[in-house]
Image (cartoon, rainbow, N blue to C red; front, top):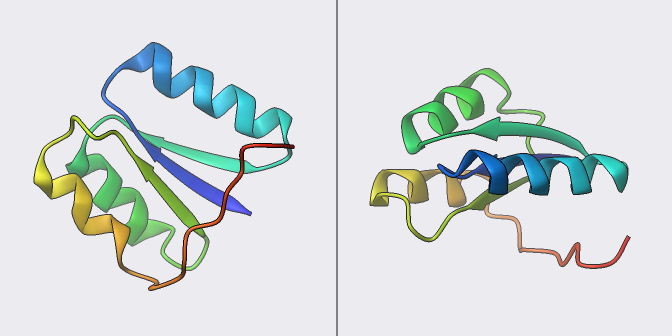
Length: 77
């Protein structure tokens, strides 16, 4: 499963990324909405889930609905 993390705080983004990679996920990272949209455009067939910081601008939220797939909990791996 491929996951895109959109988080402007580098330490939080790296921590989430490291954890998810240890759980076996392939992770893409973006520091803002513009970068996230670029990643989604180039990797559009590969991204399964998009995690976005609630403090980013509304532009970042555009990447939540491209697939229409429901959210899935990844809290335990």
